[in-house]
Length: 387
Ligand code: UDP
Image (cartoon, rainbow, N blue to C red; front, side, top):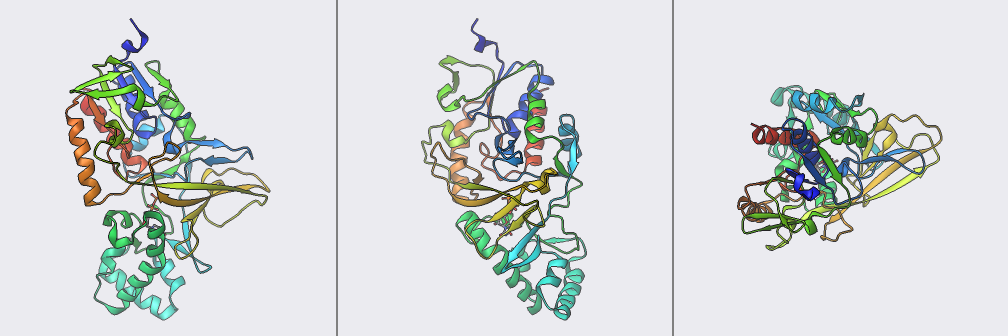
């Protein structure tokens, strides 16, 4: 028997989705699992490593774990300890730094004192303390002072940043995207308010290593599923031979079908890393640039990782642009709108002809998932597959 015939499950992609489901199938269902990963590393976009300068960096942009879901937190906590870290972001608005999400502290920094106090009282009376209001909702407020506030936030926090990030204005993209960063009626400067938040105490990469470290899991890096996997007439072929087991696919769904209806659009990012011979570059983990610059934000990793190192620090600048589909590029953000969702649905329907194939993850589901949300979905898929 050829070795490949031993496998009962094939998992394509070794990011959060693929790794969690591989572990579940291997451990809970006792299946022999082969994980195929196109790149030369595990962990997908959460991959982190020590750079040549000895600084721990997130190779594909800042990843901060946060969740309200106890099952998800407990699950990942089997494979890592956590460093307590609450992410804070400020926006650089013409040189002035104000907390983002825009909150009551930001209000007092942006407006003169008596106006800020009046607006603060109105916000608390209308929405209540600790509530979160998407900017597109706040813009519908009839009160003139609140309308002023909404205009200020829209123009100074969302407009240009969103144009850079998506190539579109905030009201041209799915409202859920800007609602990720609502106006927060509180004095809490944390970017996330979730119960559990932090960074793996060692590295994300070691979290993935621990999840993949199971006798039933075999990992093949540098293995491109586009060349190894073929879906035809309701059947799956792996490396030229029929494969009857379960397939979990976490790559781009259009590529599973040779992009026959056209490419699903994504945004990609160019990351520019800089190491500076100073101990600290900026006051918070991330500084957003919502009114100028071509990059959207700068993240200084030492804030996130807690790495103590004098006289040296590394930052990353993020430059968004359209994804062209070139092999050298990575699709990071699905652009969810009615047209793209319809296109995605056509591909998803094709996948229905292959009941052994399950689409899972940000790329495969064409969904703007946070890390915790994809862990939750992966665990739930495991629940349904393992009966
Ligand atoms: N956003 C913005 N200005 C900001 C921060 C966020 O306009 O200072 C908008 C922008 O459209 C962005 C979205 O809110 O794409 C979601 O931001 P988030 O920080 O959640 O993005 P991610 O960390 O996933 O890139």
